[in-house]
Length: 418
Ligand code: SF4
Image 1: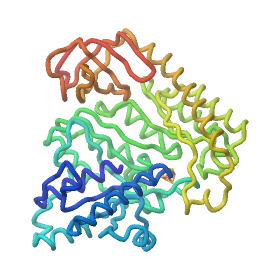
Image 2 (image 1 turned 90 degrees about the horizontal axis):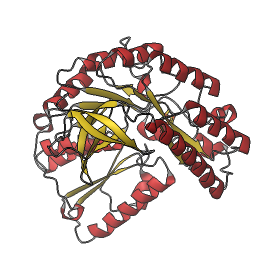
Image 3 (image 1 turned 90 degrees about the vertical axis):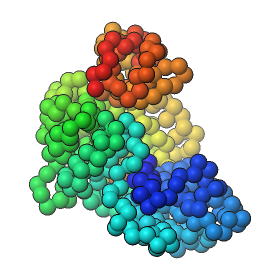
Image 4 (image 1 turned 120 degrees about the vertical axis):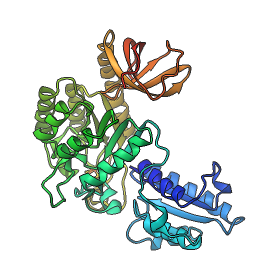
């Protein structure tokens, strides 16, 4: 989401006539887009702001802006911590910054900026469709920083998708913190499946993905849309976060282990060739050995295509931070995370081996270590080293000949599939 926000701002600045500098020190304007989802991310941004402040001592004319989730509704504390920062911008709240730059440069913002679609998007592009989140998971800082859920209209999103396709995009990933809750806040009676149907009609677009779903909103209507709409890829990221109902309740995740299992069964029955990935937090306050074993069990049973694991990180201001003691020692958190990752590695190794001999349509994104690489519809990374011709940005069929836990490798059997 932050990357998409940065790209949108870059597009607007480009339309205002600003030129990108490779080196931040040479720029007249520096915008640091921040993530505070974990303490380590926040530490990284704080360090970067400190470096930029030091540099600004020699370049007092440089405008330094801190944007993103570090900036809450009250920025007084940030002002004290970072006195050299000229402006604080909340996530996706670009207007005050753009107006200031327009005024300084005597530009008419309305006349300059036609839309925020990424100006140089590449083959695959993220399109945020929802701002904020209506949940208050006890560990999560995002609703405090990005605010409540606001969905964009279908018309607005389809218009952006069409512009992006004109700029060469073939694959779009629709983004929301709870993407399957799309439309619930709009007056019209629409949901994610309706949006997918409209985006599916965009001429020239080849693939549609969406991130991240919430188990409480993944309806049968959405699952059937994935099966029926040809451009929608068969992959769902469906965070469970923990395998224990006790921990889920403390996390304020409003579903149970059993509900999640039945939902995954339904998805796999309706879309048999789907892959499902998940997010898991280990070491949540009060997580017992048994709770952790419940998480290991669900990882084993669900056979996810990928697990994004994280150690619980206390975020000041959240419900968990205010009400629960961060009582799992760091070594135990680390050990538990390693155990989840090791189990998942074995699962991915076994599952990827099953792909050997199959043919996969792969959208080639680039070249790395003498090999072309891209993703299949199930969001698996696929390499091919056998083809010398330029495959970049095309969809090709690859016969899988080898695998590792993290990727598949094979030879091109057909080109120009899209
Ligand atoms: S649904 Fe996601 S973004 Fe929203 S509060 Fe929970 S973890 Fe945070």
